[in-house]
Length: 124
Image 1 (spheres, rainbow, N blue to C red):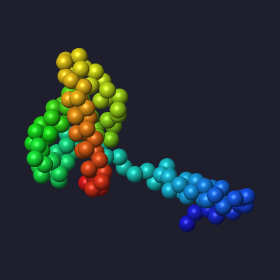
Image 2 (cartoon, one colour; image 1 turned 90 degrees about the horizontal axis):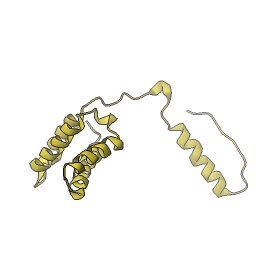
Image 3 (cartoon, rainbow, N blue to C red; image 1 turned 30 degrees about the vertical axis):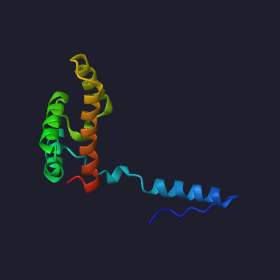
Image 4 (cartoon, rainbow, N blue to C red; image 1 turned 90 degrees about the vertical axis):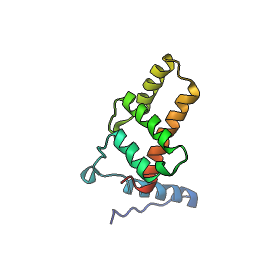
């Protein structure tokens, strides 16, 4: 149970906004309750996604192949440490190699789909 906060406000809307602020701060991660970070490599996340979702897609094997090629070119970082800038660097290099913007957008969408799906199912 958290600390009790009492305060007077002129309007109900202002009180409601303050209440939401206090509640959001109460649910923030605490330094002493630090959740462990996921140390799996991006290739492991792609394989997990393929096992639970990708194999049921019509173009699943093809998408998996594209994802693993992208992961290899990114250097197979830890999934939790992949940053947007990493993909931008990858895209710049691939663009110099003649890869179309549409193709790069597809590859980014595929990576996003992996993260989104695993987040939605709990990521195990």
